[in-house]
Length: 74
Image 1 (cartoon, rainbow, N blue to C red):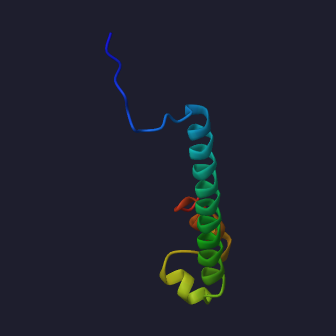
Image 2 (image 1 turned 45 degrees about the vertical axis):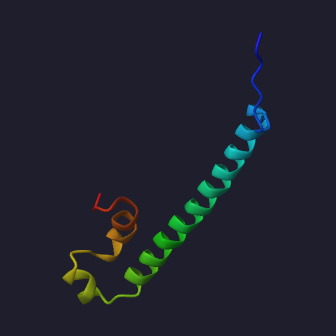
Image 3 (image 1 turned 60 degrees about the vertical axis):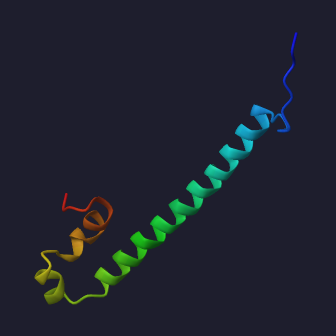
């Protein structure tokens, strides 16, 4: 019977999977915070526009939140 030898160290799939999940969880949290910051910034900028400027882009003050969050007026 012939045994093959590999110089690669065996990795525990549980350990590897846990680290991968932890990294992806941290990455998802970072992305979530960045997305929230972008939404707040867009809403802040629209709220600081004049009523005339908002009308030029087709929005009223009451529609800003939904337009930023959903990309449309609901």
